[in-house]
Image (cartoon, rainbow, N blue to C red; front, side, top):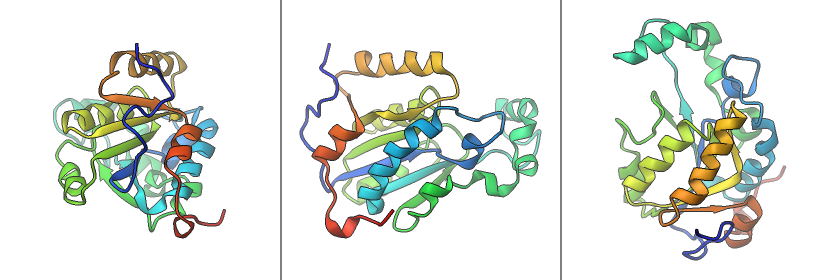
Length: 212
């Protein structure tokens, strides 16, 4: 079993990005998809983002416009979750939580319509073209979109660093189960560290910090 809270392949550097998954208002506020743990991990995500705003990419999950839209089973999905369509939520709810939105720019957003940011997009080409070989993952949900983000990054050959105290879910049981899987099942391809360990090894320059 690999040792956790250790960067086994050394400190990340200029070839790393912080990929923050779906920290949006519709998951933070009073909706059917609210993640209660989001408030708990937000300060850690803010610490990483404020240290490396120009190295941060926020993915945003964009739901269907209205019930019944979508391909195949996604159509049934949005019939079940009609309350989470854009027409019902309001377009403002797909935005980032305000504490993170203020870092855009220099941070940027990357929109997706499915769990994985790698499916039907050129994200891997964008990162590869910029010389990025390491993705540092935070956000939610631990057991859904974070999982899809992590597996895609592995498949594309990126070094993957999961920040254990900067991940959240709407379900405690499956969050805890997935954390166990991340720490003990993907030992060769995923490094799991705390926010403090990450920042101790990935400090930002003076010009990279923004005032609180």
